[in-house]
Length: 396
Image 1 (cartoon, rainbow, N blue to C red):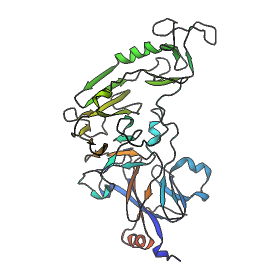
Image 2 (cartoon, rainbow, N blue to C red; image 1 turned 180 degrees about the vertical axis):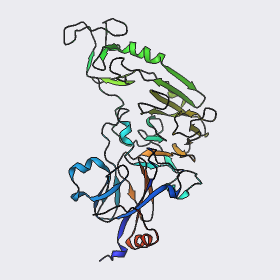
Image 3 (cartoon, rainbow, N blue to C red; image 1 turned 90 degrees about the vertical axis):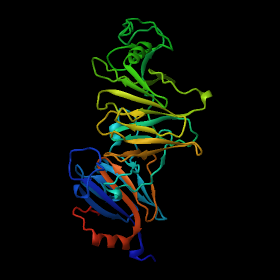
Image 4 (cartoon, rainbow, N blue to C red; image 1 turned 90 degrees about the horizontal axis):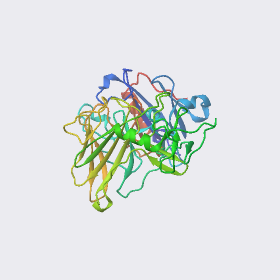
């Protein structure tokens, strides 16, 4: 029989900023700027839900009402071996059209060299990126669309190519019997390479006509390491529908932007980052970066033009924010965060994180930061005596 004091439980410490001004967690905050909430999870399955703006509540799954599941932040499960798992609510059909919904899901924060509050940064320093990783620099989210380095890609359901339902490969009439004419060129000829497509409920457009229009609104900036594409989103003039730069007609995939990649003969490893935000600070824009790793020099990311290879002009991105480092021997690319205000994080897309005894893991969800650590009940009771919580997280 296991004594109560020796029982392994999950200790969770939440940090919630007192200010409601920001939608991101601010790593520059002092301890006095945050509410600290500590609780312990003992049962097999708990639900952490949001009751108000930032008021949290832990409930046993069997006790919770089905309508409260809409407020679910994450689920905590314990198996028979006392392994605790943090389970992310599954993100269905993740795309740039619902990228904002990812903010309140679970993100693994990358370590920093911050001197303001070293206790905040407890995750391991190195994170090696894989295909389909979603990386967030401040508030701007990117997906690793392509990576040449051989590693096991982690599964994610991301809609790179949303399906378009109404399109034609030959001359035809619409449902009202009218001849289908492209809005841009006023012609009706089309084929499989240049189909005529109805993206929204307003008008029909040739693939090549839209491709030419998007190409004219795209500009590039490149150096020896990175080629940056800045693509202005085109909107329908009637309904404000934003045209996708990738889409699928039946089984065939179409790209409105041609991305230049290093040739296979060059044997240069590279990754392609594509932003999944519909909007960034300076307008409706899609950002794509083709990053080449020719040597061991780091690829710098930040807001400042002078010192960075990848430039993201958004207030949530620091002047020098993060960098990629290529490990040629191990054939891996690691990402490191530089001391900054809003941090760098990776979406926990497989939805689970094992927590070892006495090892803390730091997770971010929206503007809330929390640490999870598996400890003995005796340790938690000692901690509770020393640290009285002003707003305890209620358990049923």
